[in-house]
Each structure stands twice: as C-alpha cells, then as structure tokens.
Length: 306
Figure: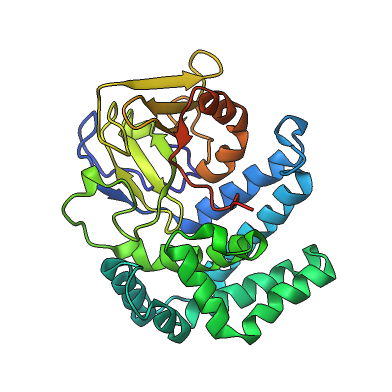
C-alpha cells in the first residue's frame, strides 16, 4: 500500500499473504485526509460535475470531511460511549427505544454541533441557521438519526442527512475500531460491526494483493468477502464485470441472479483510489450498468435520495 494509506500493513515475515484478516480498521486521520483531497480534486474536474453534483457540492463535502478529521483529533473518544454504540449495533437498530438511547448518547450530537460550527462559513446563512437550529430539539434530531440508522433515508431531508450521517459516522468509526471478530463475517452483506450497507468493494494491493474487502458506509470498517461471489445473494452462477475500458481501476460487479451490482475499486491497479469519492467518479459506469437492468447495492453517504 502507499505510505499515506489508511490501511494498516500486514506484519509478516514470509512472502505472499500471511493471513486473511476478517476485519481491517482504518487509520481515520489518513482516511479523512485522502477523502478530502479526492473531493477537492473533483472540484477541478468538469467531467465529474453534473447539475446535481457540482464543484460547490464537492467543496462542501471536503469541508465536511475536514471537520470529521478535526473532531477525531481534538475530541478524545471515551470507552463508555464506545461500549454504548457497539451495544446499539449488536442489538440492531430496529430495537424499541432506539431514539431514547440516541438522545442520551450526546457524543454524536457534539459531533454534529462541531461539524456545523466548521461548516457555517461555507453555507448560505439561511441553510446554516436551519441546520444549527436542529440542535435546539435534540429529541427530533435523535429521531432523524434513528431513521438513518434504520435505513429509512428518504424520510430525512437530504441536506440534514449528509451532515447527520457524518456526525454518526465519525463516532461509530471510533467505537468500532476495537470490535471483536465474530462468526459469519465472510458472508456478511452489511457491515458485521455496525450493520450499515457497504459503500463499495475494494480489491487490495500491496501485501494483501488480490483480496476483496467491502467498505462500510458508516463506521468505515472493511470486511473480507471472497471474490467471484455476489455480495448480496452469495451466488456465483452469473457474475459479470463491467468497466469503461480494459484494466480500468473503477469497475462494477453485477449478479444475474439477484440483478444487483456493486462498484469495485481495484487498488491493485490504482492504490490512490478512495471509495466514497470514487462513487462520484463511477457515475457514468453506474448509468451503463443500470441500463442493463441492474440496481445498485452499494450506498454513498454523500448522495442521499431526495
């Protein structure tokens, strides 16, 4: 991997892949730095800009990721909050009383407040005022957070959802960084640590050459899944790979059985790829695959419906 990669290298003394780790936890400072750099690079790429996703939005997202990095660096995460978050994920977000638990768990609310403080200069005053006002009704904000965790994305205003998810994410990522390895990781369609859907599939390079991991859209954990098998239905009967050109690092893996696809980023071809920002770069490929009748299985936390 690259020296600035957020993926911790293997500690091995023999050639080849010494072990396949079920989980890989990121170095958050490096992850956020790389993501912000990639988003800023998109502001200069007319090819990636569309009427809905333009340079101003990419710059806003870069500031948001800068805020996540700042929160990690300046606000130490305590073990008690981490335990509560891990228990929430373990019990599942369909549990009764989720909103009350989130209301009592103030760390993600502090993250939201800090992110809004950092973002205020980069937002229209009326928008910033409305988003900051959400902190005045913590019970309502907790209800919105519960909807996001349950996957009911269309019930939350997309402008609020992006920032609220970022606040949850920066807390969930720190809480899950010492998650125990549990059974069934190799078959998990959603994150085995926090239950969120994957952003994309990564084929790693370096000392993990050729191994496939899914990256979580919430806690940023990567979990191992064997290649050549659909991440959604587990079938290997009709797997198709699409790309815009031969050996392209951005690809799509589609399953003819369940008719879903997921973006694949070949870090063994281009170690500089980053999953979340890469989802924007893959929009042309996404459109072509969807024309073939496949629906996306991955989830981009910076592109909520609405």
